[in-house]
Structure formats: C-alpha cells, structure tokens
Image (tube, rainbow, N blue to C red; front, top):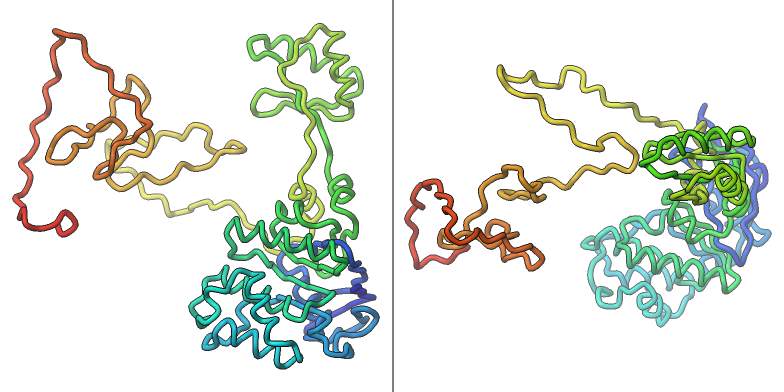
Length: 414
C-alpha cells in the first residue's frame, strides 16, 4: 500500500504539491488524474524517492522507498520510457537492471515475452518506436515481480491492440492483490481500467473516491425526449406539461428536449396523460471525461482561446466569390472531412449536380465508375445508368494529345 501524509513540495517560490494526503490500496487499479502542471509527476517522483518532499512524507508498505530492502524487487515503476541507453539492446538493458537487483537472467526473457518484444530483444533501443519504448519500460517495471507498481502514461504511443493489452495487464495485476497506481490523461481509458480515482489540481487533492461515485458526484444526469418532428405542437405541449410537473426542460440542437428533475417513468406517464407520442425517451449518464472536466475546470493552468485570425486572411481578388459554408460546421459532433486525395475527388457529387469530368482509365479509355485516378475499380461502386436506345450520345470534349513516352520504360519510371 502507498500512503502519503501532508505531502508538500516547493521549488523556490512555486508550490508543486501542497498538503496532499491519500492511500493507494492493493487489489485495485487506482487512477491518478489531474491537468497538466497539477503535480502528478512530482508526486510519483516523491513516492519513488527521486525528489525529497519539503514537508510531509510518503511510504510504501510502511517504509520510505529509500529504506526498502532491495526496492526493485518490491516496487516497479515506469516514469519515463526514454530513460534507456540507446546503444544497448532491449535484452542487455533489462539484464543490467536484473544484475543490479539480484534478479535471475531467465526473468529477462520472461518479461520480454510478457510485453511482446522477443523478436527485437537483440535490437538497440535507439531504433525503437515510441510504443516499443513503452513496452520496454513496462518490462523493466515488471522485472522484479513487484507487489507495488507505478505507471505514468503507460499507453502513450501504443496502438489499439497495445492499449487493450495494457488495460488487461493492469487489471490482472490488481486481481493478484498488487497495488497498481496509474497516471493518465486518457479519460476513456481510465473509465475502462481504473476502479478508484485520486484527482488533484494545482497540487491539492480534489477527489479520492471510486469511479462510479466520482461520475455521480460531478455530473448531472438527464433524459433525452423527442416528439414527432412533423408535429411541433406536440413538442410545445409536452414542454409545458413537464414544466408544470417540476421538471426543467431545455431544447437540444437536434430538436430533442433535455429534461432534468424528473425520472424516466414519470416523463413517460406525463407524455401518456398529455396524449403526446414519443419518438425517443432515453437516459443520459455523463462520462468520466465530462465529470472530470466539470471538476477540474477551475484548476486548469493552460487555457486556449479561439483563433481570431486577425490580419491573416487574404483579401479576395476582384470578382471572386467567398467560399461556401460547410453544412454542420461548428455544431456539436461535427468533424472536418478528410483532405481530398491528390488528383481525385473524395466524395461523390450529389445526383443532378455537375461535377468534374470522370478520370480516364489506362490508355485513355474511360475509367470504371468509382475508379480513382491510377487505381483499380471500386467493387462497391454502382454501375452508371445506361442511356436508352436511340438517345443522342454526349460528345466528349477534345483532349490534348498525351506526350510521347518510351514504351520500354516501366510505368513507375514514367
């Protein structure tokens, strides 16, 4: 178990951590959350004896880290995955750590297998990707088979498969009765991994509770209600009835209603008594991210502002039309489309609207429907409608002759 009592750390006139007290208990994954600059890394460094607290103390199993006998066999940590000599191979890096702690060499090969680095064990770490470096750091933390583990952003740089692996690893370690302390900025991942949360802001404790209690205490649940879009009078009728029953009703951008202060069965009864048909009646529970943002909104040190683009917009040339607004832009849930592929059109034009001429296939023949320039035919494209017999055929626009090429050269050379 990790226990901090009145932990305080000052760097000159800056207080990084102030009067912080908490316990990290075994048998559960404890998430350590907080905005950038809140003191999470400083706290972890003090737990591991890398920084001395200005006041207070922190112990692991009742002892300060520096007084633990053969500490690497009892505590494993990943604070900085880049803290590796780039000239060493993955196996030699772990072997040197094992020899310093009296750990058998066979354990090195075991942890390399656990983190999936067997095939690159003889490669120098300076050529590792960010995700591979994270796996090597996790292997170093597991080397001594410790009972207490600390991880600072363990999924940084990992692909989805690696993130899932780390999640399952944390849960399995906690299920074995170990103490697992994980710092992360990924709220969605913490919601799936952590059982308990410790949240700090500007060096002070903000919350110490289970994930479920944290979300419940820092969010307002509501119900989404939708009436038929073709009958707006029903929406107004239901709004009045819900307000008279003591509910608070707010309109949503998509035409639905957000109702608070009334349970779902009561909303359904009111709609039935008012003879109002419902297209939707669904509960909405806040996510961990929403609850976290609500709690820490007053403890954020670095806030971005809207880009005003003052003086950066180029004036339009005479006669030019301003760009058309993008439908839905600026609305919640809107995402910018992918950039157009070079030489192609990423999205099909609506039916009945003029679009760019179809790309030509190899040797000047018209390309099949859905064919990108220079690419194979799209097997999911719909065939072009055939013109009725006897209908006049459209005349193709004249094209410039293609430049002469040497037939002996490959397509790539041209």
